[in-house]
Length: 144
View 1 (cartoon, one colour):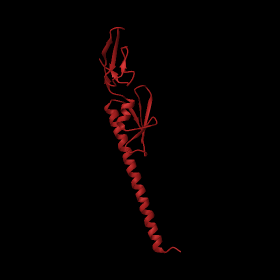
View 2: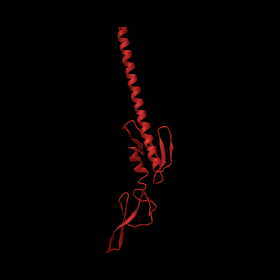
View 3: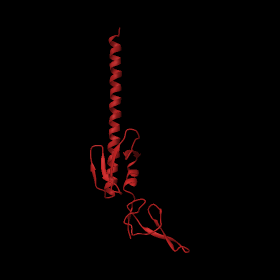
View 4: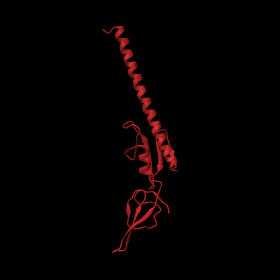
């Protein structure tokens, strides 16, 4: 038979565990709010329009695709973006890309008469300059 003292000790133990669980859930929620707030701040800084929900942010990526980001419990300070765990900074870089770039001529093949170009943002070689408005590799907006 369980004594009153043992019942009281078990009650206190259960109550302490419940308070610990509540504290952990509170901290997780706080981290989620901070992470999503950081993402929204970065989107605003890049001039990207977005829709905000309680724990989800949605915007249009550089290729015209809809992007959704959710904070996670699995990794602290990360977001689930298109089935990948990213920090807010990584999410911006992956979906919005660098703000601007230039397609610059950097070499000429004298024998073939070919001119070679390179994106200043992602440094990817581009074999022709077709008057791109956006880099075909990183999505940065091409400026003159």
